[in-house]
Amino acid sequence: MKDNSSKVLLVGPSYKIADYDIDYFENKRREGYKILSYTGSILYFREIGFAPDYFSWIDPTSVLSQDWSTITESGDFFKNTDMLTADLFKNNAATYKKHRLITATSMNKENCRRITEELPKFFNKCHWHKVRLINSMARASRFKELREKHAKLLKIRPRQARELQKKIRRIEAARAEDYKKHGVPSADTPDFRKHFYFIRCDKLSGHVSVSADKLTTFVLPLVLHHFGDSLDEIRILGFGDLKEDGRKEKREPEPYRTGDSVPYTQDQHDRFIGSFKFLFGHYYSDYLQKNKIKLSFENENSYSRTMEGLK
Picture 1 (cartoon, rainbow, N blue to C red):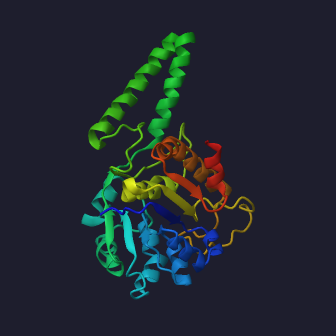
Picture 2: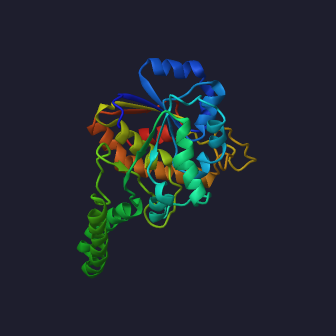
Picture 3: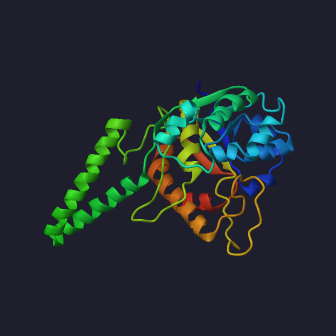
């Protein structure tokens, strides 16, 4: 069942969320925002005694570590909170394994049972949205580059252009296969409101691998789908707060990030920025404008500056 609320506050697990106390979140709720906690931010919400409207996650490692004990040892604290995530872990995580997703936690039968049967007992209700598409951005980006290169070669080196055209046709055939399987070509913008498109981003153009930014690959598609036609504003806190200085020095742990809790290295920072820039520009910038959905960050950070640079 979808939510017809018009305003959503997304709260990620960055260290910056500790700058906002319970009064801030209570005021946002009074202003009409539905508050969604993503992964480790649930630790902070429990710390300040504020139960969000939604709790979301995608990586089983995070939900089965600190998040798990915070939730399961809190009695009925989250009784009015809904869990919102992807339907990837039922049937012994068959869909998760089908799409070759990777996690540090074994997706054995017991862990799948804990996630799909035990965890939901601590929430008001659980929304398991079926994944419609997992889409590799590498193909879309590479296809665009090759078409531009082909147009230039036609004028100066027609023989090389013909060879390149063969490669382009192979990519087009792969896109056609994607359309046959999933209902949308790789380079097209999905209708996020109609289906939940979980976007997989393995690499950008060329051979530069990137760390997948969870905000643009998972959280935004989930929110756009779950809140549907009623949504007109998304406010973001706790995503994109990538520390700009001192990443080569000793890195102190961040309290609300599960797993590797130390600040990102320079290389990780650059890869996350590259992922966010590509995905936001490719999928969300025009879509949000077309559907009159306002998206903004609560504080200036690496992602907010990147987004402004795309305008």
